[in-house]
Image (cartoon, rainbow, N blue to C red; front, top):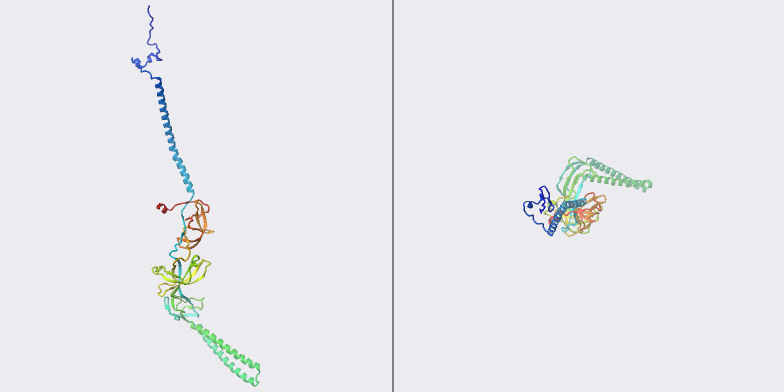
Length: 428
């Protein structure tokens, strides 16, 4: 019996293991055996490994993305916050402050002084006329009674001559009145005249006597005026002014022109004004020292002579007079100087720089900064002005912080920030 064997044609497709014949693996087509399939557990492990790697890579990518975002946003946020902070700081003005310091009183009280001669006089004419000649020029040292000038007085000379004639007439009338009175007294004894007539003659005699005295007094007055033709020095001193020349019209009295000015500078009067806080420390006899700017190397001893014993209502100071010996004439009268009192003559006042003052309608003020940075305007009273600094007699304490160079629009309640000085920063 012949077995049936199926015939496979090349074009027939036989599915083996899910593949067509012409789709067999290359190894089988080449006569080689395919590699064996991995076991099921190995496939799961491989899948898990690939899954972990994917998650790791995804996490890294996510972290990189988040880091990039953070690196991009954080500087912007920081810059934004810094800008907001800077804007807020710029909105608050910056100021520098100082504190009041006690005045340097270890050198004593130093005050400006006005130096004047011990005696001085402005010499005016006492008689009208014309200047005939002057005998003393400026700088001349004259003695008391020494002639300074001569005045021609023609009108006055004529008045004196007239007064002499009037006196002679009055004396003649007196002689006649005396003779008449004596004669009528004799007639009255014999009752030749009435008593009334005799009394009238006696009264006429007394009138004549008074007239003579009046004329004599007038003549003496004119003689005194004529004696003022000679202009003389009232005391020994130095001529500091000669304001007339030969031929000038001279008018008598203080309403006329000053002829000479005389000063006695062997001793000097020095006047100072002591502020009220130090006034009680000044007493007569107190020693002091006078300094002249041109003679800084040589101070001159001085002594308090007297005080006005009252405070001036305009300057709130005490006027003090001192005496200085100037026998060598080293100090020129009317000079400017400084008087220094040794020791403590009063409580030293606080001082502030001049650029801390505010000139407002309410008066002098300063701007203070509180601990919370708030401005407070406070009224102050100043004493002596030293130029770059001034004395503060009331209104602040050494603990107050005072703004320097305050701007005009500064008001109480404003917020400010204090800028530390460069010097103090460098010291740190």
